[in-house]
Amino acid sequence: MQQLQPDAAEIAAAIARIPSGCSILTVAHDGIGTGVLVSWVQQAAFAPPCITVCLRRGRPAGPLIDGAGRFLLNVVSEDPTALFKHFGKGFTLQEDAFAGLMVQPTEFGPVLADCHAQLGCRVLQKVPVGDHDLYIAEVTAARLAQPFKPYVHLRKTAQYY
Image (cartoon, rainbow, N blue to C red; front, side, top):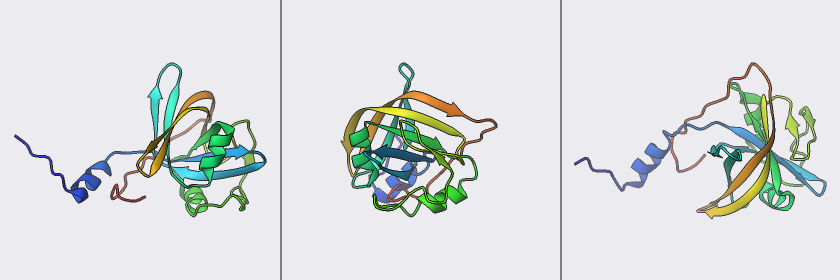
């Protein structure tokens, strides 16, 4: 019988082989908006169409999502370098996360012009999972630009981003 290893490094290396996309989650509430790079996004249901998004607890976007009850997922294309540089550094709620970017407001959060797909999401549930919060959300609106090839990401390890 094949033996699985309870070794933390082995577990982290195996989890890192699960491919993911990357998106920029944007949210606005009470006149404050922000955006954050997220990579743990997955379809969760067909009817109604639902997704899950994980966000590290303590990120500034969390309280805005909780207050608004919705968010916008901007799916990045196969060349995300500029958006990764911009959103990878993170923002406080006092900083303008969208400075220098072409954005348009929506009821869910700002649309980023450099992304080719957007999903407007209404939060159904928030579940604490380890050091992250899992948001389960219904997709109630969307936009898809053509042509579009999404970015696919493999991490080196599952112990950090």
